[in-house]
Length: 177
Image 1 (cartoon, rainbow, N blue to C red):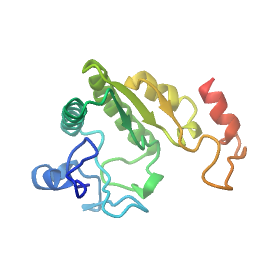
Image 2: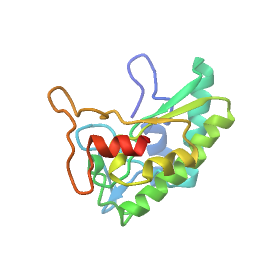
Image 3: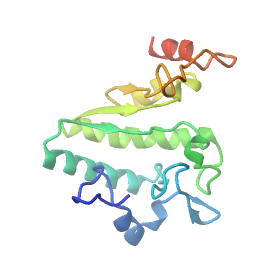
Image 4: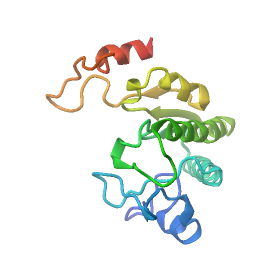
């Protein structure tokens, strides 16, 4: 996603630069780039590509230090190809392979941010539905994590207990414990 009207960025890489220099870093479906469902102009990236991981790390650390931040929020750490309709895709045949790519990226990016003297926090919304995945992502290199839907999905949409095994509030509390 390119910068806003004042030239600000999300601290990572610009769409225009990646598109011109590394089109292989985009997730694709039948060769076409995948737009995140519900977010026009936001493209799914191949988070498992080692060169992409390093480029993100370099851009994030440079931006954070330039702007004086002491830490970085890594938003939307995914656990399933179904999230934002990024799957099916050409690069990953299963959710397990996709999670392995995220674990690899967190290891490179999260540990690299920490090594640069910065803090990390990851938004791992919904990760609770995969037992142990929260801990896997933390151990890979995040300094901390949260679920933006901890108690509800929105006004009047409280998170109940559902599924077997439970995927709702009890599952979140258990994952945190």
